[in-house]
Length: 250
Ligand SMILES: [Zn+2]
Image (cartoon, rainbow, N blue to C red):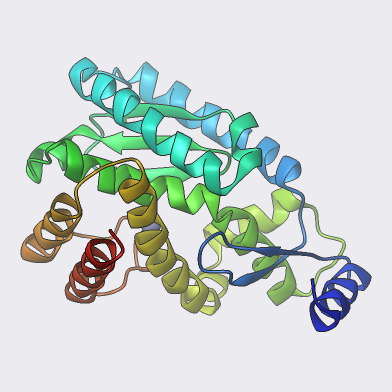
């Protein structure tokens, strides 16, 4: 750490914030909640969601897809841990749902839910499915939930508000969502790029990554996270650019 970085870290600390850096991109994040606090608050919601889906008979009801997710996910998690060592202690979980409202979701701490209808609709092969999973894993690795909640707290300027309240406001208050939309779209692009790095390191061919983004672009699929989505055509160009990069670095 150089003197300026040390000063910056000191300033963040003085403001009650922890400075963190996103692996690979090196982007500095300002984080005001601890990783543990975010994970435990999200955990309650996650359990509610799982119970709800299970009660409706819509959780893990595609056993073949679940097996694919677990096999493909294991290699991607190894790549993730190489970039972010503390991720080895996270409670990674993969699930499927036949709820057609879900395409793919990553919750803080590495809980990933994939919609079986979405996978079927795009007829994803293993490398393409790995690209989708890697995007979601990248959100966890880059701690995007923690960053979004920290930013929401900052926007609200309610330093004493507990995390639970910030989370509710983030979910229900459109004005907060709009003010965070720039950060959301930055996070989506970052998850695309970091995800491709993870998939590449896990040994998946770049051609499958490009074809995943081509399928999204061709079908003009809806957002993985509603609203916060870079145009699918620009995601496809990004994927092609990254594929060239992987090729030239071989
Ligand atoms: Zn995303």
